[in-house]
Length: 511
Image (tube, rainbow, N blue to C red):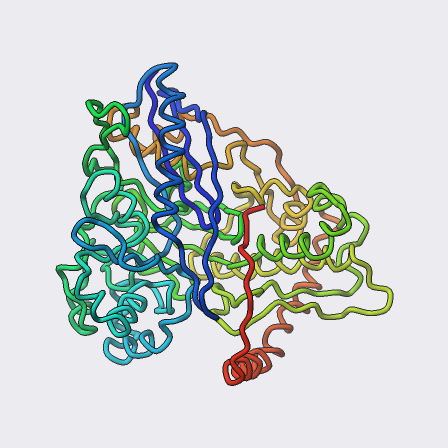
């Protein structure tokens, strides 16, 4: 039987699987990897380590497929965003620098002054934030490592590096280039107005390609006579949108380390500065992501620090909050564990428990975490309803964190929406396989492919009418918490910077 192999690289691990012509996903393999924190505010990845893991998983899946049939294509999905600096042979000159990295704050300010924030948003449809939009990291590398920069043949992101390893070609698909801070997302081209003003050499930029395009061939690492077409693929959330068949004016949720509401639109003028905005895999459609950075990580942190040492399995993440009540006994939680993106965009913000008293229990505190993350999602949904004029009664939810039934029920109550938990969590792998399947003829179109595949709803959580008024009242209180602490966060961050205190950050893993 014929299969397509999909590679999906997230921020904590690598998944490789294979999809047959019927859209069924199997032969899944997984390998974690570690993020690197060499200095305070720096976050890196070991590119060679990731490639070696990808290569091993790819061969394992390939061998399993060959026992049943053959491989017709390979496709790629990766997280966004990262910066890689490659020589002419495609070898990395420096570790990959992640979107969480904050080293390029000065460069971000410089770019804003040179280009203007108005022009940046007009062209890229995004605000400029250090690390998140990789032009800032590009400029940092040029300023701080001029000798290595001179050796740089191409700059790109993780997908650029992996696709070169697979095919020998330097490319970046347009869902990824949307987050570079120098890409014109309406005209699908690098912006001369931006890269020339900030002093970036056009020759160092990779070619931007359609996600649904064959960019080269991969030679089997053992049977060298076998060469398989490689499809560019796309960013992980864009692949997930394709797998779920998200159309214009539709929305879905992805839950892992981050928690994100994604909206699809065909009107780029609606794109909101508080969201992360990119080209969809389908041309002339755009995805707008309301992204909270660390809800899943906050839950994982609470488990690791307070529950796991007591011998609890992760089943406690479903059971503990039942020992509390809606409102968590008066305790509130801000889920900004290491800064936050939507809707506040404050790198200084941090996690906070408020309202703790002598009767507060561990169950109250954990429920407050789940409720605080849900209130943050409601803030994002309000932007979607007002700016995008999109009001939905229900939405699809994917990712490892989506399987936490109690958390999903709290979200349903806070947002007054039904939540459909999907069967297949590996939508990054599945989505990138669908892109390749459309290219090589498995499916007539992406829309048709999404309808044909099997990704059933496991269960649906409906809002509990008895809880709606209570959560509306609690939400009003939650909205007062961050504004009252904003100046404190800024003062605390300034003190940490002045005293040189180093904050150790554990790797956040998807739950």
